[in-house]
Length: 192
Figure (cartoon, rainbow, N blue to C red):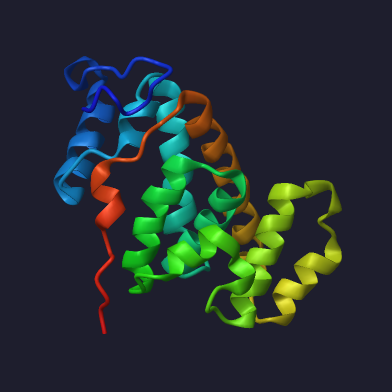
């Protein structure tokens, strides 16, 4: 694992980790072709690593949102929060899942000017509001999501993904997690 995965805390050695963490990290490394630094960084505290990735997996596996919609939320929220790690890593995932090499850059800069549907602008508007001004989120925001076609479960999922990645952004910035170089170029080629 990359010792530079994060700069403010030590990155543990893979062979010193509990078996379940080591196996999951090895599986992810084999699947991706590299070890995403978030796996290495959160391994600093194994109990937190397990909770973090269990909730992450639930959010992406048990959702009424499309995978690219999940990544759209993550990228827009990470852009607002200026989270370097998540902007780059989830920008790459969004490019891959949306099959769009430009979308992530648009969302990081300003989702309002991105080439997306009104439905997705509404989704990201609520996610950004929850990120910047959570006390102002009200019933009318949830109704707007329903009005543009999101199911009740999807409305919940929008809030859950937004909230979780606000936590993730803050931890990544607190620890100074660094994105892997590989993420910078993933999904940049146009696929038609």
